[in-house]
Image 1 (cartoon, chains in turn purple, blue):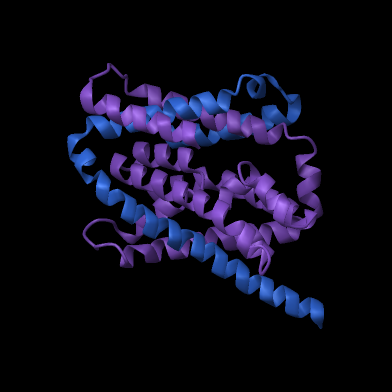
Image 2 (cartoon, each protein chain N blue to C red):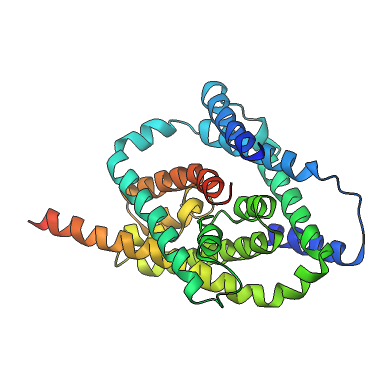
Length: 194
Length: 91
């Protein structure tokens, strides 16, 4: 996380004080490469489909609830922000990264506007931080709901934390939720901003 | 066009990963390096846009509102579902 924040900070500082010859297509090429390699990573996970099959029904319901809850409340966020700044569609799109800050930030910058892309990046970074802080506390009262905060990041960065504080079945559901949310983030963003 | 390309790239990666299980990208942390380059470029675009740069201090608050709302939405929906699930199991 520190490395990623440093990359953004270095970029901001360099952009502020220097002008680099950056071709327009480079962002698109890198974005496609990122999505390709993430797909490769998910696909090559040992026994991933068997793991998911075991808890499939719960994984699907959990993922659907996480996605719909995020989108509905993400849309409601526009009511708390001055209305001239962002529409409901824009706040919903910014929330739709579900913790995958690198992809959502870049995709929204490319598809909609750099301002909303930066807001989405920061919002999803905050969501991942919230998950790190809240999962250990909330998993005692409501394991599945605590896992929902992780969104798409539940399959990677947060998985160790989730397994430490939950039963194996909850960890598997969290992993499945992360996979499905990760699969859905590019699709949802394309539907919202495409 | 770009968006169709993104989806095709993802499905292609998923399919090749499932069929061939390549390991080189994990060894060289390809995903991490590409992510860092993308984030750097995203930061660069923000920094080189003077109008956008001035708006940055406000962005933190909007982002916090969106993050809390998004996380709370998923939490509430799953929390209610979990209650129903527990009640059914206890019957």
